[in-house]
Length: 588
Image: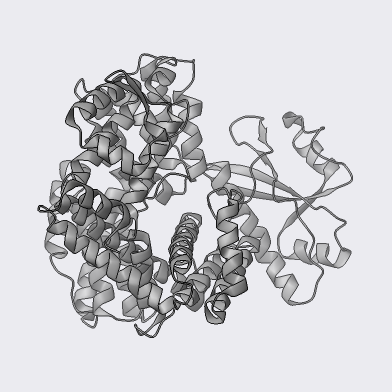
C-alpha cells in the first residue's frame, strides 16, 4: 500500500463508490514491485495455465521435458486449482468449462503418449475459443462488479488478479499497467464512468509500432558498422533521424554527430517494447562478438517515438530483471555479514561468496536469459545438499521452507508498514495508538481485544477501504490456528509449484535457448526474492549458532516450518501468549 492513496486522496479525483476506490487501491498495490508476495501480481489464470499445460504435454512427448509422473501431476494440480476458482470461465463458457473438468480429472502417466495427445487436443480446442473472448469477459465482469451498490471486494480482487495475469500474458509490462491507474483514473479530467471506460479501453488495445532510437556512445568501428548493416540492423546518423522524424521536435535530444540504431517493434507499451527492441540489437552483437569484432557501447535509455502521436519518451530504460529497488543495508546487517565472512566456517563462506557473485553477474547480464540463469545457478548451488537427489528437489524443498519460515510474521509486519504509510491513528480509551509504530507482538495483543478491534475496524473503513479489508482478512485467519496452518501449507505448496515452473524455464534456456514466457523479468524477480529469503534466514541462524553448517540450517528451517504447521493445526489448548509467540517466531 502506497502513501497518498487513502480514501480521501482518491475521492478528490471523482465521486468513486467504495468498490471503485477498492479497485484503485488494490490495482496499484498489485502492480507495485515492492508489494509483499502474497498481494503481488501472479502469472496464472485459466488461459495462461492451459497454455502452460499444453506446452508441458508437448515437450514431454518430444522428450524436451523429462517424462516424470510427479512433474506432470504438479502441473495438473495447479491448472485444476486455477480453473476451479475461475468464476468468469464458468459463467461465460459453460460447455468449455465442462470439457476441461472431464479431461483434467486426473493426471495421466507421463509415458502414456496417447493420453497426452488427447489432452493436447482438448486443451487447444478450449484455448482457441477463450483466447478470443477471455479478456473481454474479465473486463466486463469487473466493470459490472464496480458498478454494484453492494460491497464486492473479494470478487473484485479475484477478477483483478485474473485481468492482470491475462494482460501480462498478452505482453503488457507491469510498469505500464501500474502507471495507467495514475494516468487514467487518478486524474481531474472526465467523469468517473469515463475514466474507467478509457482505462479498460486501453487494456483492450492491440500492439502498435513503437520506434526505439538507441544512441551509440562512442564512434562505431567501420567494420562493425558494415556487418551490423548486413545483419539487417538500421543505423542512422543524427541528421537522418531529425529529417525522418521532423514532426517530433527532437532537436534538443538528438546529436547530429552521433549514430543511432533504429528498431521498430510492435508492442503494447514502451516498457515491454524497449526490452524486446534491445534483444533484437543484442542478438546481432552476440554474433559479431563471437567472431572478434569490437562491440560498441549503447545508451540503454533510448528515445522512444510513440505510435499514435508526435510525442516521445526519454526515461524508459532497458530492464532485464524487475527487481525491487535496492536500499543500502543497515549497519547491523552489514556487521553480521562481515563478522560471518571473517570468522565463520570456510565452506559456508564459500557458498555465500558464490551467491553474491552470481547475483552480481545477473545484474550485469545483457539478456533476460543470462539474467535468469545466473540467479538460478546462484540459488541452486547455495541450497545444494546431500539430502535430495537432483538440484530441483533441493531448490524446491528448501526455497519453499525459507519462504514459509516467518511468513505470518511478514504478513503482520507488512500490514503495520502499510498502516504507517497511510498514517493510521486510533484513539481508544483516551489513548492515541499509531498502528504503524506498533511491534507485531503489540499489534496482535491489541487485535485480540474485541472492543479495540471494533473501534479500529470502524476507523479503517472511513480512512482506507483496502486496509479495512486487509484487517478483516488477517484477523479472520490469525485467530484460527487451523486457518493459519492451511495458509502456511498452501503457501509452501504454491512456492514448490512455482519453483517447478522456474525449473522448466531454466531447462528451456539450457536445452533449447528459448524462453517459454513473455514476462521473464517477473520470474527473475521471484528468483531474486527467493535468494533474499534464503540469505535472511541463513544469516539469522548463523548469528544464533556460528558453528552450524548450511545443511544443518536447511534441516532446522524445514523442520521448524513443518512443526509450526502441525502445532497450529492443533492449537486450541494453547494460551494466548504461547499462540501469538508461535505465530510470530515459529516452533523453533
